[in-house]
Image (tube, rainbow, N blue to C red; front, side):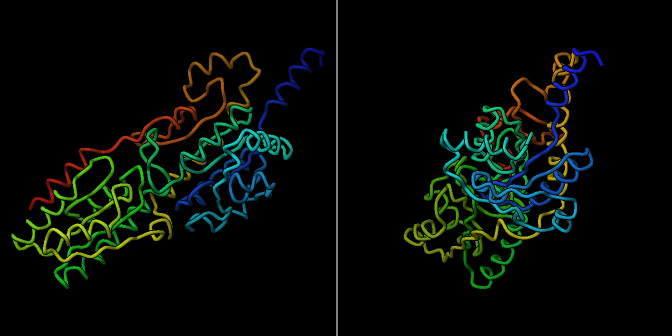
Length: 357
């Protein structure tokens, strides 16, 4: 082999992905295990090694790193939560923490890192990408508050969890001629309240994106009572206020009997839905493909032309996978982090029409 050919060969080998790391970060979401499973088995099918990182970025900084085999992800697809566990990590907001995390990836031979989590986790992933760590983000959060993707892993399961509780609460409210107010998660995004409310035939939906005064909401409930509708369901996202505070307001200004229920962590638990499992599998596979395909293109004469043909592959390697119009897509991490959530006003207005009768 000629010397220049040997050097080119060594450069290409150096650029290839051999080991992929995977972690879950931030709040857990049903379907995270399905995503880990897809990452592991897709990587193994390509002859790559996989290292699991326990407890997110916190575990990365503590070097809680294990090898993962196909057997390690068996019987995981149907489980909620994340078997790798998760945590929030303030240290990743500091330059020192970011530098340390990048150095640990290098120490353990992690050529590419898959980060499963929400916007905070993506921000940490972007910092690592800026430091030269090949990084892919997979959106895992029940809030569905990441605007670059139509759906995040865990959202569908959370909506179904809430919908099931709506009917249980409606049953007991109807037995006492009461109004039930159900508070769900969503500080900045009201998607859980909206989608579960539409599916569960809620009479009023209170979300941060479409402010409705409590006075107007209370008047609607009073009007419902006057026309003989003694039982109503009100959905309220936590970003639009607290259920008990709203109930106190209604009691003060009307004679409507009203009770509050805060669903809390029940929304995040349980077996992931079929939709979330399939979505997670597709996203996990795409994450590995992006890492492997980008690395294999480096140092070749075709890199520039192929990158121009494929919008998924760009110069600075940090991407997020998502889904738009039922198609798996990828965008730069910076775009994923900065894209604001797009609220479905038409769906909100649809529910307002349905609730008039």
